[in-house]
Image 1: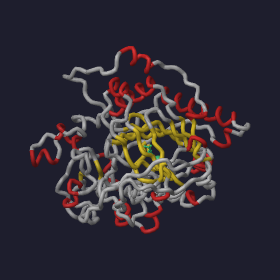
Image 2: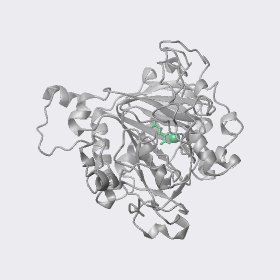
Image 3: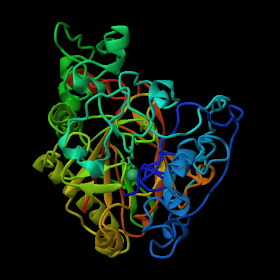
Length: 469
Ligand SMILES: O=C(O)CCC(=O)C(=O)O
Ligand SMILES: [Fe+2]
């Protein structure tokens, strides 16, 4: 799973490892309302064979850009690649697709994008004056900033709490991110006396980021009549049919509205509880000053954006990721079985070849605020065997709708776009295991009302991706 930098998870522009994380600013301009037609291909036509396709040719190098050019400078280039020339510039002119009949069709125009600022700061090492409060990545999370520490990980930093050391000397050899509030007082509180907890995006005091609003002191106004709410929450087992199953390519399947509202509520509540405990939500980033445009936590194993690799503990605080709850495992298993049933019903296809079964031992949970994004990347930090077998990534969407991009290379201009709504389950395995994918936008106020009433989920989107290492 390369989600950090350079096209792997966290991807190009994401700052290094796998994911590419979009900058909130600096997108190239496109005239609003312009229709853009990029692809109209049969299902799978855009997806090459995972073992030989263009999308997979870089597999094995988690951070192709970093690897090829090396070092922080290049990582920063990628981070700043929201500029029109960057490989991950989110120019947003990919097409929207309606793949309900198995073909990808352009159905909607693409909104205009914001202009690029002229004063994007230059890259540099982790010195004081590169504090992210000055950086374009600070975005809507002003309460979180990079904390400098005068040790590198290799120098035993693991045993230290990532305390806030503001005046790190230039000879700093490493840096690490942490949540300011972990140190009790935020750096800016120390200087300005401002209480960051007033921020809507603020961290829970002394705790991890809370994805739900607090109930304390407030009476919850129920807007949905109780009988309708109960009906919505009834845990009926829906029969997935052709119109709510969409095939984007071999092994890439979208189960529309698969998760019942009751399951969605349970998932959000569980994630909230897990997210406030040890190993809970934090804002990941890179030691070169960039932050990811989301909050994250891991279950089973920790995924470290800095190294684009999995480990048993999280480097920032040595927290061990909580295990994946059985209920989550069950839902994943059932979703894969649902796909198999569907594939088998279609000309007796060998469903398990197209979409190999998988038992997840990793779950990465992302919470995107309404400005959250995730650049095009491949998930390829799992074991070579898992990748070789095409063991699928199973993704649950909860809360606000996301504009999800995918394609067979890291070119945003050529990516397809599909909306992922609350309750949707997207699976990509088999020959589609190495697709490039990302989130270009969160659509405000699109979460189901009942889900919000039941969970008080904050504005934004929760995404769980399950994988087998
Ligand atoms: O939020 C999503 O839908 C995608 C998340 C993702 O690609 C990842 O976490 O690697
Ligand atoms: Fe991913």
